[in-house]
Image 1 (cartoon, rainbow, N blue to C red):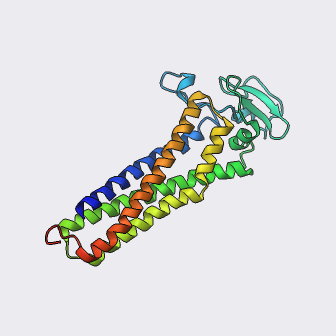
Image 2: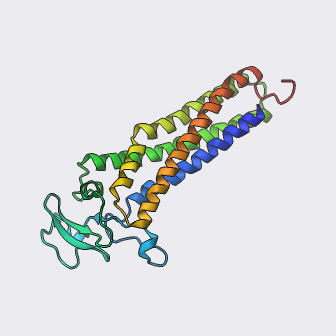
Image 3: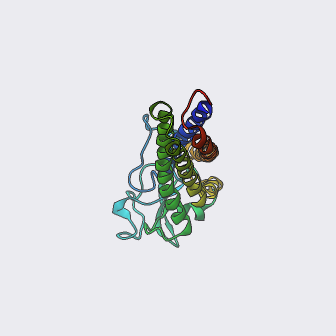
Length: 240
């Protein structure tokens, strides 16, 4: 029983780490769409995700300007006029594989009125909650291990901890699945909205998400399996 509990905790911690990394990936996905670009430590183009299309700078936003000027875009971008959304900044070094998809993802209007933008905000929000719920699952698993030494005879409390931990982990996993995160990241990869570094980040995010779902599902299942053991044996390490 102790071995199974340790494996459950190990998978929960691993899933939590992947949830943290995926949250960081979702944050990085939305960098450099507004304002000045964020560059790497050596100011290298290859060290940060550069979108192929983005918003103009504030002084040249579509609310105040309708013609391109030299100061409309940050370095590395060229101002263009789009027939649908108005002024945009395009990266001449990296063309979008699917310009319309990437344009909607960039949310040029700032109102997030497209399905793609809404999907992005949904995934970004749910990724944060998945991170929180994953952390709660780890805490419950830690309390479960403490029960071995604090109150090994409290069988009801220990089994409830296992059941609650399993439920929270299922919520964390299924919330990301329900948000359409897998489809969204896949579409983002196909659309090719970034420079090579950014596309590497997207592929990493896809792998991170899959690892999180697998580990979280495994940990949730193990917690559920532990519940009847805890209900019968409690936290006894001997005489079982």
